[in-house]
Length: 314
Image (cartoon, rainbow, N blue to C red; front, side):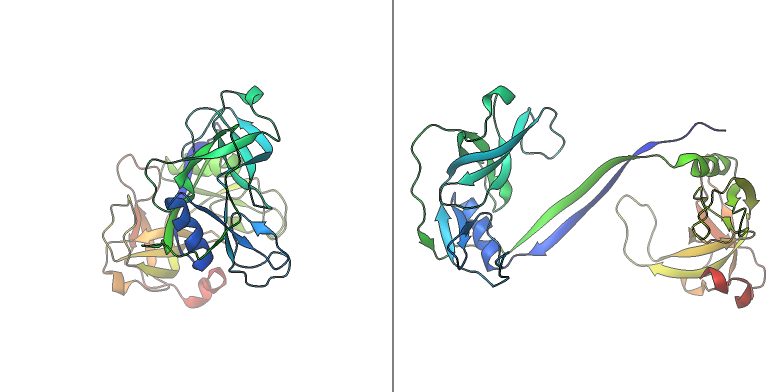
């Protein structure tokens, strides 16, 4: 049994969204060192502001300027900040009810240690030196023992050069372990072999193996070598170049049912014009020197497979 594998993986993409009038005013206000909330019909002031009352679902637009000072309602110490967090040194995550607000805002508190943080302590906003109209315009909160600032005045929400949209990068860092079944599959690929597992109940062969049959729910332990040739069951033409992927567009990405397998896997089709790829095309893997998986699949020159031989794998 080969040693179980694991590897750090990152899922990352930019999330772009437009802003309605309330969120636009809130973020533009931060750029101008002004914190805005929204007043509901029952008189509560919500910070951060929302466009619809969370109780009645009614649209709300009445903006109110609140103070930049407030009170910690609860907190948790963060001894090891991660990439992209507000501060690089240890800090406290705090919920702060700003003066004039009825809800709390989550942000970082710059404090020398957890012994310096307590529920009920007074804090104030530390503004970022350069502000662009984002929640990061609040660099963090800091302890404060001065007088409360004026608050409660109605605000039009009108600013010059209002922020109307944001791009928020989303990122997930995690460690992935493929488990027993896929570790054996990956180890076989290093020898240019494709190995799946057979269900002892329905006898279907799954490639890549999952460790259990998704139909019967029983463990799959019998290993079966499949392929190397297979049949294109369906495909798409890729016209947008992916970041860090050195493949010229357009190219074809296909589901390929390897001979002897009951599950189609993914693979790139090359070695022929992209507009000649078709369902039923017979293909075989092409390996690059030192590659741990097929670089792509190419036509074998065989006649196309009959539709009835792969229709259940679409």
